[in-house]
Length: 313
Image (cartoon, rainbow, N blue to C red):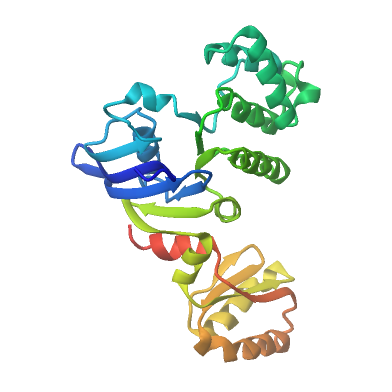
């Protein structure tokens, strides 16, 4: 295995009865990389992670973590990683410090080392002021940060983050993003699944998009956006009641599907349609439809996701 590749997945296959859950998937993840694994519900993400974390045996192919084979060296493989999911595996009746110390001792640390490691992690995750409060006083975001801290007790070189910020408010999600980036700066390698595409765009060095158990595409966020092609026209209408009329104007002018999200219209356009943008703005003005915002910008990861997965079901 290439020394730079901490994770190597080669031609993995998994069948459940007559259904092929994962079909010939391969990818490598380099040391210190944040690798995003994206796909619709049922795409095969969870099955892949379960195989990578030795909870499930693949039918064919090979998975290596730090050079250890998940099938033939499962015990050594499990020493290479930690997993953080959506649900905090913590004791609600104990304090944050007590939870961390217990998990430290379970990871083989002496009581003194466990206490020192707990103090380090409480500081790293901005929990030092709440360290000795019971978890009943903790917000959802604080509990999630504690869960992530617990997963790092043993200083794993590989961390699997399965939708770690689901349900968190934007401020707490941003705190989690900073915590994840800090881990990588200290040498950890992260595989991230998330339902928030802007999160993958912000955090991930590379992204693999899978659907129906197959690899659809892989690359940096910028590379994936280029695959969509063209530009995105985005118009924010002031009055919600005017959105249907504005959508009709944009659709009739471009002969392209127009997406709406509350008061915002978006449509992917290529260079041949750019000259029609002025016509659209004039028509909106003539119909007395006021707008708050208008932009022509590069496609988002949402556009990549929709173009490459929607309609393939």
